[in-house]
Length: 161
Image (cartoon, rainbow, N blue to C red):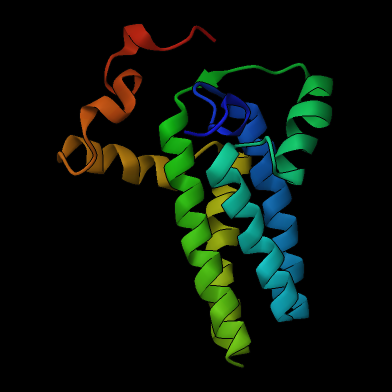
């Protein structure tokens, strides 16, 4: 069992998630431009840290939670499981880009990493979390059990904004 400090938070501040996504956009664009395996690895490792513990171990998560969002003074609490699912999708995509880069398929790695740019840009600018949408779709179809995120299905269980 993981210590409480290493568990993914539930609920999460939507604005912290959006800020982290904005930082991911910047790193992903730099990664695509430079096209070096180490940067794809750093991008994937950031997603791994966020899957494991949300912002706790992630430098981008810490910057968002402790510096940027407090200065903005914005809070909107949303269920954590869909955000964690979105981070897992990001980990998968950046992991593929990392492997492609290691294998010398730079253009393919850049194209795959561009998917992260699009998804993270939608999250950061418009608040559209593609991973959360997929999570909801899979939960409605019974692929993800309702017990994983009861607040996703019962609005009365959600935290007030």
